[in-house]
Length: 203
Image 1 (spheres, rainbow, N blue to C red):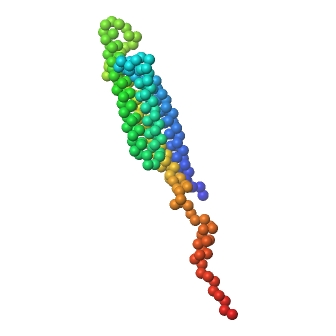
Image 2: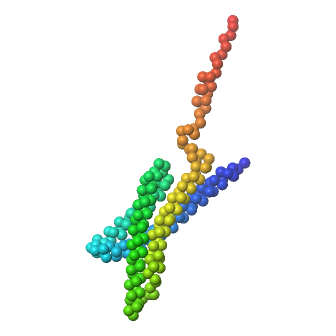
Image 3: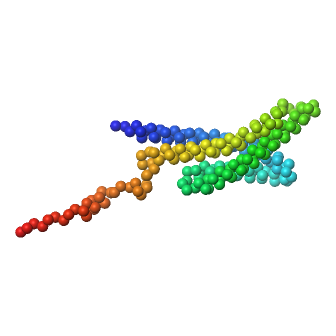
């Protein structure tokens, strides 16, 4: 008779794996787009902060590299038992560097929008219709915030996959010493020890 509960558990497990793969692909695309958009912005801010132009690329490389490293570390540690402290550290690091990216992108967009509005007021055509500076700042922070959100979402999916795998028959106890049953040789040896000796025949 087919085991419907086992089939449902397997379907749920592979469905979560497919969802995780899809989320990782989206997160990689969003993260790549956020890196491309923020790199030039942070480099421009570094130049405005009196950094040498030839070395200004190092600042966005450090910020974006820290985002990438802390993202990968937080996702990996979410599945390793006993690593809550390490995961918490990388999550805090991720929040900090994403905050730097968010503040930098928002400030740059706000300042650029005000400069474009000033040109329009002076009769200079900037080639586009500038947004309100506050709206431009909000748009600029969408990508970094989505990077942080998708990182948290991937951690949730990884935990869900672990829970689904542990509910499969033998999934959480496979290879565990306490789950091993006695072998037939061990059972027969125990029976021989407990079996009373045969009675002697009287002559």
